[in-house]
Length: 80
Image 1 (tube, rainbow, N blue to C red):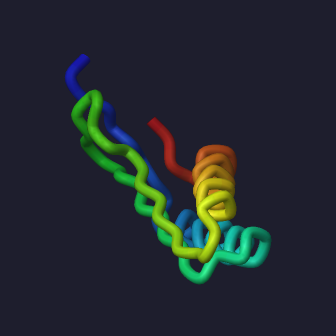
Image 2 (tube, rainbow, N blue to C red; image 1 turned 30 degrees about the horizontal axis):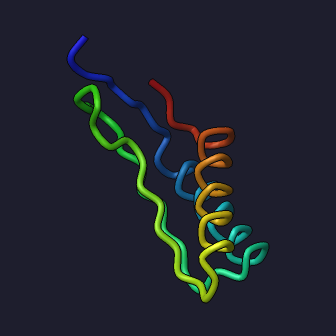
C-alpha cells in the first residue's frame, strides 16, 4: 500500500472543526488555534493532520493541541 484516501463531508466537517477550535480556545486559554486535516490522496507516512496554537504557557499549548487532535479524530466526518 502506497497511499491512503481520505473522504470528507466538507461543510459539516468545517462546522464541527470550528466548534472544536472554539471549545479548545475557551478551555485552555488559547489566543488562536488552527487545525488542518488532509483529505483525498495521501502517501503513506505523509502528514495527515496539523494543529497549531498560540498561548502564553506551553503546558496549555500542548494540552490544547492534544484536545484538538483527539476531538477531531473522535468527531470529524473524515474517514479513510
